[in-house]
Length: 451
Image (tube, rainbow, N blue to C red; front, side, top):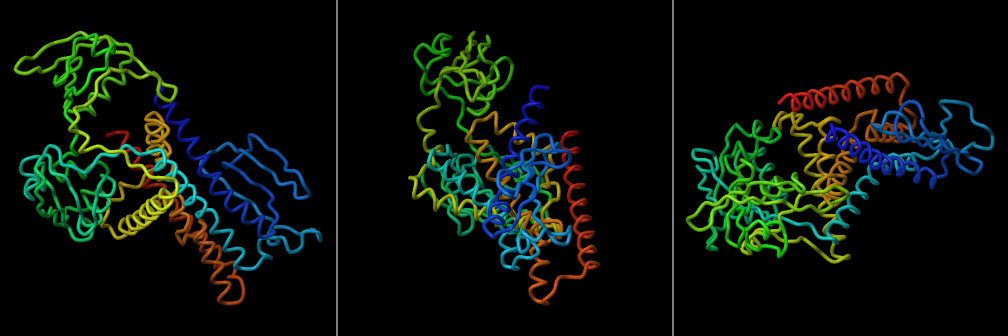
């Protein structure tokens, strides 16, 4: 119940922030263009809070009951008569370039928000895991390609990769395009070789959520839970753990790597646990009382150990100076936007599974998990969703900004607005497409919940 509530709160916060950014783009550019704003609403439906702005425009600022979007309502002579003092300030009375600028501003502000978020992450530093191969399943695509545990992926095709995000994006791109993934690998001794994973016609299935690693037959490398350092006076020190111990079990839960160790320990703040370790040829059982520390307002368990020093070859802090981070943030935003658009196109053609479409339930779960993982993770989540929101709104559907831009371009070319009948037909097609998209999203959410 607690996780559901925290996920819901995180979802509402995330959507409210991103919708506010998007609608503020429309609002502020509209104001710059001299348009009169009647209402700025975060959410739909009945207003829960309203404030009337100062000045002669008396714009209504609202927070409404349904937190799944928002809107900016401009004065429009097609909807009501205009007072003489407001002549020329209606949306439809402005030039077509001005209208297009206002429509583009929402998605553009979403992209700018993502750039700002990535800039903050790069300046602060992002803990990054290099793309290295963990356990390889015998008989799998990965095994047939000759991948071995400990191999590091240094390039996918012609793209050099030093982190898993870059590696996965390019692996998916190649796999969907040709059914082959060309890798440049480096083993633990430093020798390099090429390998090709051939999935043939199985690419679409492997694009289903959570299927890539299982389908290809390997796991990302994680450091084994071998103690490299024991914090003096900490829980591990008091419980008798020593440098070089390999933790294999906590309270009957298997510990395969340091990621497992962090997960199990963090959920047991101030708890008494039984830890099994391998020390040389011996297997020991130790009674340990875990410590606790506060992380983003939540108490998490603490053992007081660090991984062995050689794991620094796999982990690094991706960090840049303030000016350098601007270029990296722009690059990250652009790559993510292009990848999102490409995947959407491939869903339409059937090359990528439509199970990747997520609805509010799945987004809420991701929002909750990222919020619990820390501010940096939540900020990264916001950046990705903000980019997705920007890309989706640029699609040429009449109910979205992209569709409205198409209307303006048609009017510009023909010298007069589209007929009311054509606009209504376009709206109906757009609403149908949007309802179809939402149906897939809700179906996928429910399917994931039911396992």
